[in-house]
Image (cartoon, rainbow, N blue to C red; front, side):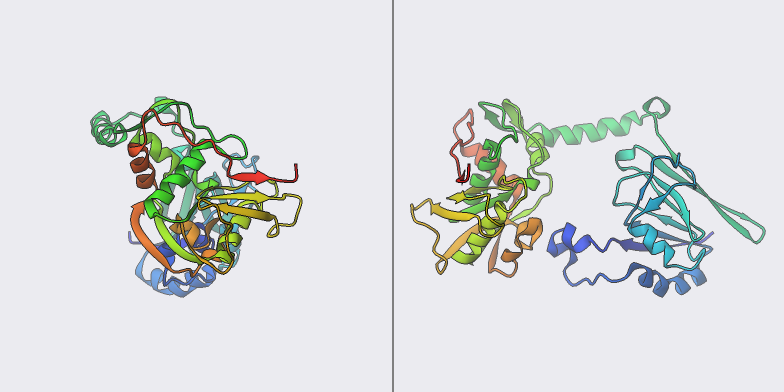
Amino acid sequence: MKIAVIGLTTTETPTSTAARNVQGLAFGDGAQAIKRYLPGARAAADFVIVVAHAGAVCDSSSGGGYVAVCHGEIIDLARQLDSGAVDLIVAGHTHLRVNTVVHGIPIIEAQSSARSIGIVDFVRVGGRREVRTQLVTPYADQVMADTALTAALGRQQQAVRNIVVARLKVPLKREGDEYGLGRLIADAQRAAGRADVAIMNNGGIRTDLPEGVITWGQAYQVQPFQNRILRLTVKGDVLLAALEQCVAGRDHLPDCHVAGVEVWFDASKAPGQRVTRTRLATGKDIDKGATYTLVVSDFMATGGSGFKMLVGAPKEDLDVLDIDALTRYLGVLRSPVDAPNDVRFHRTDR
């Protein structure tokens, strides 16, 4: 049998990935896109499948059957298609169990990390076509490991993961208004870019580090996104707006870490009006009309984490990944490394 596959990605893609990944691409109505390619796919194949990085959420009472009450992007899309327009939609993005039918179209989505596996049987009996779907939980005692493959992969992974990059004096945990690990990463990025200021968004710091020997694999768990480090040239008013974004959250806690600057803020004021004072490493305040260099990730430079004020700023790609900036910086610090403990965000309304 011949099977045609139509690929589709969520309309959230431009805001959930670095801008470089979607440069030159347009994101429109998914159902209309499928309809545009459907006649050619039907003419070329026995079955047509949509493989979508877009998903759904279903209630817990579905039991994996077709009685689930589901909602989400892929459900809305299927409702816009004609009944049975495609033979199957394989969904994703939400990392949840989905096994339902919308407008005669089976939709299946397996959980992330192989917690469940989607299995689909395509059946043709005479002129009748049938698609049968199921979600299977792969319990460990029911799966035979490929020991040779596991060993080969393990050797390759360990060769990289076990490279020692530092020895820490104390554990570095993501606790409190600010924390040493965040300051350390911001310092590393500022050093890599030789800039006036660096800003690191807290969402990009994914785990803690323990006391003692730290390997590359452990550092990678902290910064797994492989974001590129950029040096921007910005006016003081833009830099102040970026610092305002750091303290704009509802929980009144800084949502980023900085290097090269101290910030005083009043959390009782409206977002965007909270920064009351700044002091650069030179001892001077930020001048709205002056020009400064700012190091951030390419994710932030293209508006990620709400830093829209940085979009369009003149930039230089330093050809350094965030994890490389961190590991190189750790390598030049005196061992055992003790993260900086100076306060860089001062809340004045307490």
